[in-house]
Structure formats: C-alpha cells, structure tokens
Image (cartoon, rainbow, N blue to C red):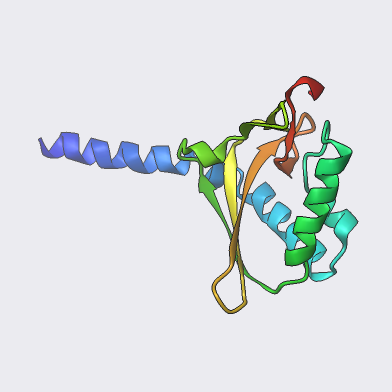
Amino acid sequence: MKNRFGLFIILSVLLSACSDTFVHQKSLSEFAERFEIANASEDMNAMLELYALNGIKKNDLSILRTALSFEIGLPIKAIHFQELTGAPEESIAFQHQNIEYEASLAPKLRMLVEYAVEGQLTSKFSLGKNTQKEWKIITAIPKNKK
C-alpha cells in the first residue's frame, strides 16, 4: 500500500511538472516581459502586437483599442499564468448581431495581470500559440473569417 501511495505522489509531481506553464516557462516569461514593456511605455501598437488579430473586424479592433486605453499604463503588480479549467468563459464562442464569433487561436493558458492600483484590479487573458509558435492573446473573430 505504501508503495502505491509513493508511486501516486511521484506520478502526480511528474504530471504537474509537464504542464504547459512549466514546459513553456521561458517563453511565457518573455511574453510577460513584452506585455509589461508595452504597458509601461503606453505603446498601443506594441500592445496590439501581442494579440492574435488575424480576421478581426475593423469595428471590433476599435472596441479592443478603447478597452485597452483604460488599462494601458496602469502599474503592474504581477503577471501569473494558469492552466485552463474548461470553464465556459475560457472559450470564445458567441453570436452578436447575427454574426457567430470564435477564438482567433486555440486557447492554451490563462494570463492574469494584477495591477498595483486601489481595488485590486485583475485582468484575465486567454493565450494561444500561432503558427509561428508565438504566444498571443486571443481575440474574438467572425467564424467565417478564419
């Protein structure tokens, strides 16, 4: 019985060590650094380069720019990465004005950005890898535009 429990512990540790956040630790740290630099310099174009924008509608890009304008430049306290849990909010699949939307990339991880402001503001971003194996923040795109 002790041997089985010990084997279970070892397997649990090995499985957690093989998680996406562990395997991609270096590239995720580099992504977080680019995010912090773009945010601190308040460079909207640098920030938008971190997003998977292929197929995004012009109007949706304007909405994204407006949303980013409220957060860009806020001091960042910490950036963390989490495994996805399968929760509905982790996927992008909805309909708006008779247009079906989906994720611009397959979601792989969640990035949590904690801002050093009163009220403990935290933003959540879904991340995926593009065909060049680069981490990008996922956006909503029309389903027929992929």
